[in-house]
Each structure stands twice: as C-alpha cells, then as structure tokens.
Image (cartoon, rainbow, N blue to C red):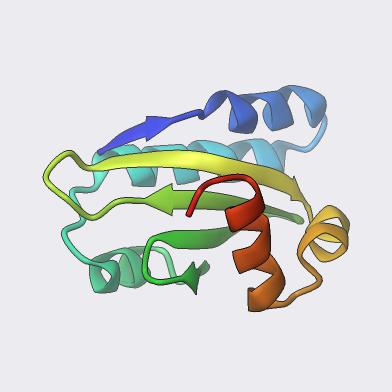
Length: 113
C-alpha cells in the first residue's frame, strides 16, 4: 500500500529527536502501513490493535507513543492511504474532544468527506 503525506510523520520525528520510543513507533507504523496489503478493515485491526476506526471504516486514529495520527485508508485496488492529522494527545483532545461527531465535522470542514 502507498502512504501519502507521510512528511507529517517525519516532521514529528524531527521534532522529537530525543524520544527514541516515539521515533521507533513512527517507523513501525510507516512500515506496517506500507508493507501490508490489507483488503478489509478486519485485516488492519488484527495487525494494528492500536487502530481506532473513527469514520465509516476509512479513517483511523493510531496511537503512536503519546501521539495520535489520523490516517485515511482506502480499501480498494489502488491501496492508497493518506496521513491527515498528527498531534500529541493534548492536541487530539483540543481538536477532536474525544468525540466522533466532532471528528466527522472536522473531516467535513477540511473537505476529507
């Protein structure tokens, strides 16, 4: 599968150079996403139990250390994924309020859905 917009994850790595746990977690996430050929959401959830489906089986939050990453995953023949948002847990709570309705509204406001 192809991961688009992963520079957001690399930017987080550069900002967190002293946090080896986070750097390795980001590398694992990128490797898992790009190396797997998931055909359906169940396959993803078996490999990445930290994934949380937040909108219609296409948008997932992943826990990476103390951070969260919102990634759009299209389960189709093209197999493309896009990093939509990355931030620490406080930024996640400020932005999304731990609420799926707020996540949906944010996705609509940013023209992802």
